[in-house]
Length: 189
Image (cartoon, rainbow, N blue to C red):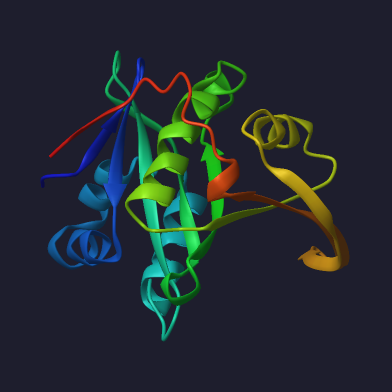
């Protein structure tokens, strides 16, 4: 399967559109799906099955995700991309995850985020990118602030964790405020 790829110094960022995800699930066995998507943990696979079954697109929302593939090992170590993408209003929410502890705190997400933000503003025609995070998630907070995101406020009782409603902080980055300085990316097809 051919992927559109963004490239950084240590990573290939493989683009996963709704169409590609549908092909992956329709044309492959569970084992092959796990391999293609780098889903090493059962809970990650179960989450992807639920998302697939509910559909990646709705009337005015869609998603676009990138797998983070470490060049040295060719291992999928995480993902970063857009969900709740509303093309009509040129905005989307960004989400990201490093799968295993051994790859955290090594700057991989910082390296991946800038080209993915650039892709959002240039290729997806976004004007606004939002991020919603746990206020206690210091690494995520630093990542956003280091990339120009501005805290807009608190969403009270926003997530249900177990039996407790917890707050989230809302951050945003506007196209006019995005800086492409020091980008180390290339795009290949």
